[in-house]
Structures are given as C-alpha cells and as structure tokens.
Length: 476
Image (cartoon, rainbow, N blue to C red; front, side):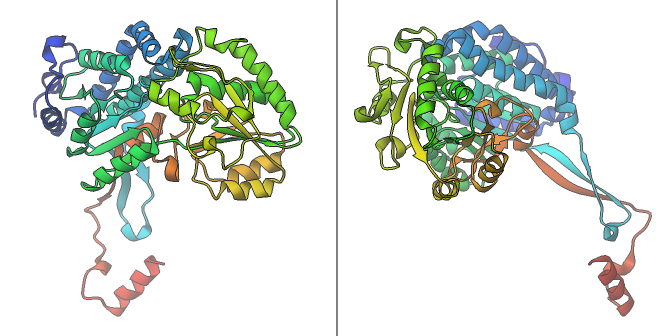
C-alpha cells in the first residue's frame, strides 16, 4: 500500500477537485479510496476534521448570509443554531477521535479460556448523507463530521429548498476535501432517486416521515443500514406545579425559533386546565418581550422557507381559535407567532406536524388519562414537561414513548455531544452526536484472540462422558 502522505495530501487547491463528476463515478472513486485503507488512520481522520473546522470558521460570515437568504435567519441565530453547533461537534470529535477508534476490551467467558475479547470499531465504507432545509448547514456538517471521524468516505446531498446554503456547502466541501474522500451532489428529486439507487454502505437521512419511509424502502433493496432523523407532533406538557413564567419564556423560545421550523420544536401544548389561562397570559407577555409588539417588523424574526409551506401553515390556523398572533405577510413569507386556544385532536392543526409558528393549546385534567392518550399516538421525536412534581416527572418520562426531550426546558437536549439524539418508531431510527455519532457510522467487529499455548480438547469429538460432563459444567 502507498504511504498515506502519497495517497492523501493535506494541502491542495481547487483544481485538484472535480465535484461535477456523476454520482456513479464519484462513488466509484470513493470506493477505491476507502479500499486503499487511507481513511483507517486516526491521524488522517483528525487532520480531515481539523481542516473542516478551519473551513467552517473561515466561512462563518458566508454561512450566515446563505442562511439569511434561505430562511431569513439573523446572524446570532445562524451562529447559535448552525455554525456554532457544527463547530462544537467537530471540536468534540477532534479531541476524542483517538479514544473512540481504539479497540474496546470485553469480558471473556471461562469456556473460551485462554483468550482475549474485544470490539474493533470499523467504518462502514461509503456513506450517503441527505440533509434537510430547516437547519441546512448544521444538519449536513454534523453527520459529515461523525462519518469522517469514524473513517468513512461520504457524499453529502443537501436540500434543494435551501439553495444558497446548498451551494455554499458544495463550495466549502469542494475546497476542503478531495472528491474521493468527501463530495457534494446538489439538485432535487432526480438526484435523490439516482443516489438512492447506488450501492452505499450507509445512509443517513434527516427529513420528513414520508420521505424517510421511501429512503428506507429503497435501502432495503440492498440491505443498507439506515439512520432516520424524522419528526412528529412533539407535545409540551405543563402541569399545575410548573413555574409558569419560566415555562412561558422557554416554550416561546423553543417553539418560535426558526419560525417553528425545527424538528424538535414543541408542536402543541397540553396544559392542566387549572393553570391554562395563566400560562396563556405569560406566553403572550413572553412573545412580545422576545419578538416585539409587531414580530413581522422584527429583522431577527425569520421566514417560512417557501410559498408552498407558507400556505400549508396558514391552512392550519383556525381563525376562531386565535388567542393572539395570526398576522401574515405573503411577500416576505412571514407568519407571526400564533397561539390557538381551545384546540382539539380533531382540528386540522392536530392532524400533521405543524413545522411553523403556530402553537395549539389543549388542556387536560387527569395525568393517567393523558399518558394513556399519548401512548395511543405515534411516538414523537421529543417530549417536554414543565413540572416540579417528582412523581409526575418520573411517571410521564418513564411511561410515554418519545425520542428524547427536556424537563423544564425545550429543544436544548439536542445541543450536547454527550447525549444521543434520535427518534423512535415513526420519529426515526438510530441516533447520533458525539460518541453516538461516531458509533452511528461504525460497525463494532466482535473479535476473540485465542491463545495458541493451550487447546482444551473437550470441544472436539469423540464426545466422551467425561467431556460432556465438562461441557455442561462450563456452559450453564
């Protein structure tokens, strides 16, 4: 095998990269590069992560501009929720890649004596990363960093609904990596179909449930392992013991961040009937504090991604149930933070994931009945609970099915590399972030290294009564 410094040179210019090759040719180049063994070196992986970190840092202003073009994100929100999060993930992996890639010791049963058992983390090979439009930079770069840290090659397919960010990703990745290691394919459904027909070793998809089902169906034809990061109707429960001012502040932040276009945003509130009106008053106050009396005039309040989604969200608003908000502006694709009081499960807004700045408010009386009702519904990506009742916290978090969540906060559980992030059931399959992201793009090979010094004869025929007695003694 060629020395690593010949197979891969740390410094090169744009002319060395041809990112307009067909996806088939790109994957073939990546397959050959992976099979050369170049990506198995931990030093190679860390060097690649360091280059990615520097590139993201260097492009942070252009990233902010692209996110503003696609979604109207302010510079602060763009950095807090996208660029900074990506840098944090890459930084974690740079620090821990060496430890994560080491073989892990395992216990060896007496029946295997003398031997050593261990797990060897191994990259899948060539990964396809399909990212969405709502956090188009972070949700492309974070799984890419995980894939690189685990020793894979990767093709990134960003969403066609966020064209400015997609082009920036293509530029950034093209200047940072050779095509045979990491490449970008832009486009829409045609390109998605073409990529899903190719023989990848791993697929990582973030997006809607409907498209996730199609990705899994197509992957099943080749038995390709798939990680699905989807969504669902994530409930936010507020009981009678909650700190209502704090709850309102954190609910408003989590729900209306990125105009509600967040997969883990609280989709709807379920409030104990005894505190509902008090909470609604606090939410109104907090909305005005955070976004102003006229949110549509707030330059830091974003917009809906396109007209199709703008019209879809408006169709979910029942004008008779608007507690406050409801203002909208078609020319800017903006909808003010809107709260709907007295919502029911039969309402249009409760039939699908809202994915916009509309917050229906339902009420409940009995905790046991609420848990039973929630468990009849598809498992959401997140669940949030505001309470100071330890028994209620224990009961709801243990008995309800959901991907992850927070007690007395919203959305922040995805902002840590020390917890796995993912869904369950219809909200997704698999998890990532930090070491869990490394494991997401790795296969743990189970290995036993047997000693040559001793070879116990009891497993070999002929099986005498004495051997059988020994076998029964060891295996019980």
